[in-house]
Structures are given as C-alpha cells and as structure tokens.
Image (cartoon, rainbow, N blue to C red; front, side, top):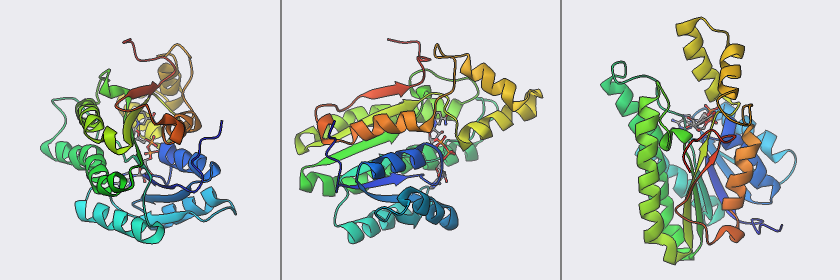
Length: 261
Ligand code: NAD
C-alpha cells in the first residue's frame, strides 16, 4: 500500500530508545522527514545517525519534555528547519510506579509533567500549524493501563485514562481541519521501560527478570511480549493519508491482553 508519507515532516518525541525509536525508524523508511527528541544529547544524536543509516538526514533535538518552555522551543526549531510539522507522535517516559499508599505528592507531579502534560503541551503547540495547513496526524503513545488498570501502576492508570478523554474530546474539535488524533496503547513490549519495571519487581520479590518476563508473556493470549516494530507499524498507518477517516480511537497493541470488547 502506498501510504503517502513521503516528504511529510514528522516529529517523534522520546525517540532515543524503545517505541519512539522504532516508530521514527519506520516513518523514516516510508520517506518522511524525521525530527526526533529525548533528554540526553549524545543518545539522541546517536539515535539520529542509526535511523538515518546513510539515508536522508534525521533532525535530533535534546529536549526535556517535562518543561513547557522546552516544548515551545522544540516545535519552533522543527518548524524553522522544515517549515511545518505534519505528523506528531507524542511519546515520553512512563510515570513512577506505585500504589495509592506508596506514591508521593512528588511522584504525582513527576507523572503529571512527564506523562500527562508533555503530550498535551506538544499537541497544543503543533495544532495551530496543522489547522492552518488543513492537514495533521497526531498519535499518542499511552498504555493499555488507560483502559484496564494495572496493579502497582496507579499513576499510569490515572494519567493515561485522562489522555484518552483529552484525545477523544479534541478529535471532535479538530476533525473539520483535516487533523486526526488517535491513541495507541502498548501492552508489554520489549524496551528499556520494561527492563525498568522488571528491575523494580525483582528488587521487591527476588524473582529473576526472566521469570517476570515469562509471567508477563503469559498474561496475553499470544503468549509472548511485543516487539517495538509491531507498535510502530500501526502508528505509521495512522500517520498516513489513508488513515484520514480514523480519529478519536484508542487501539491496543497487546497480544489480545485487554479483556474488554
Ligand atoms: P523507554 O523508557 O524505553 O523509552 C522512553 C523514551 O522517552 C526514551 O527515548 C527516553 O529518553 C525518553 N524520555 C523519557 N523521559 C523523557 C523526558 N522527560 N523528555 C524527553 N524524553 C524523555 O520507554 P518505551 O518502552 O519506549 O515506552 C514509551 C512509552 O510507552 C512510555 O510512556 C511507557 O511507559 C509506555 N508503555 C510502554 C510499554 C512497554 O511495554 N514498553 C507498555 C505500556 C506503556
């Protein structure tokens, strides 16, 4: 299928590793002009080199997305270099883990800025340009926790459900401008984030990481963990011109784990 992504400018945030990196790589292969960001300068420049692989250049930006001014500068810089942003993949690190009796006020603030407001600020900053050009694709990477709360992930369960409400509401407000907004919800997928979660559990329970990964794999009917490229393929389709009539949806990429219909 011709996705007609070639030549479009896309910004993928949180892209030095994991799901963001895989998504930026797939969009680059489809011929998009790719801008990527994450906090650490050397990691994001290195990622840009690997994604480019000798092909068209990838634009790397060091940016901590928990700070509003940084987001405004990031969007201004990408616009300055490429004239416009057609596709935004809003992705950032997950919030601290914990239960209601273990997360602190500071954890709530961290999750609010990192997981919730980073996405909203990114979207609100790119939207005026997309509306003006009458074209835009916004994809949020959240989690299946948005629809099916996961034990010990109180902050993820809370903030990601909020993002679904935000995305659905805004989708109706911007549809007439040719701008779509959709959410993809990964289940357990092999990335650094999964290593971090497994380390946390391992420290508490003494289980090995392999045992923890095997337990997670058995939680879904597919009986395995996901690969980042599997989520990236869906994001790439949602970013395409062909996906113009899909908006306000939330799609799980979870091996069938989510129980609801
Ligand atoms: P990851 O930790 O492997 O990668 C996160 C990326 O975001 C990295 O590039 C990191 O540098 C960047 N990042 C983190 N904080 C940032 C900040 N403040 N500013 C800028 N960049 C920042 O995570 P991942 O597995 O790729 O997951 C991506 C998102 O999907 C996360 O929110 C995660 O919680 C969520 N998620 C992941 C899984 C999974 O199984 N991997 C499952 C459900 C949800």
